[in-house]
Length: 247
Image: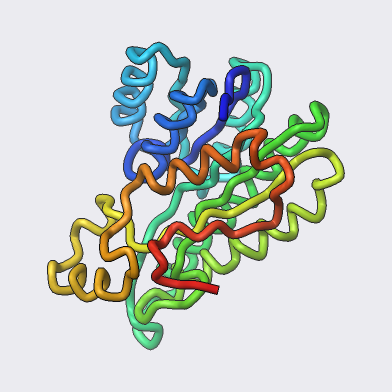
């Protein structure tokens, strides 16, 4: 699944799934534009990719800021000439039962997890249309498919990403641009590390493969969807959940 000659923009690339996706895409030959708010962590990521013989650059970006999204995409295209692959990974949580959830926490999660994906797609789509090749990959969640108590905002944002994925697939499919989503289940990241052992053990009991997933499991799915091997797949939600949700 060679990505040699491709340029990938990955949001939320400073840690967790986004960081691992950036490393995997670079390993497969893509030049990586790594974007996130934490410049220091981005610099460490770029150094790691470069040390391994890859090519990457860091772009400080708050995906909730429309002007920053436009400026970052413009800067990445100016530096690398194009963007072939967009991985919308940036996301946050502000968990609370809906009866106590503050409007500000609802808005923040929807803005960062869903509106940012629309902004990033809108910013890169002209470049993809001109070259008649593109891969849009949105990182959604199993909770966007089955819901989760205390995460009405997060679940809604991730469900919205699935609808966005399918709508874009229909809009740009004739130009050889695919739009797909990857829906991770329980993945071992900094976001899940704060959960109690009791919660984790209960979650594993619901997973037929009887283990928590790794960021590498998700990155493998992203790398596949970014490649020519997935050229006839679009509007699809790829479940990476160990069988926790089927059908």
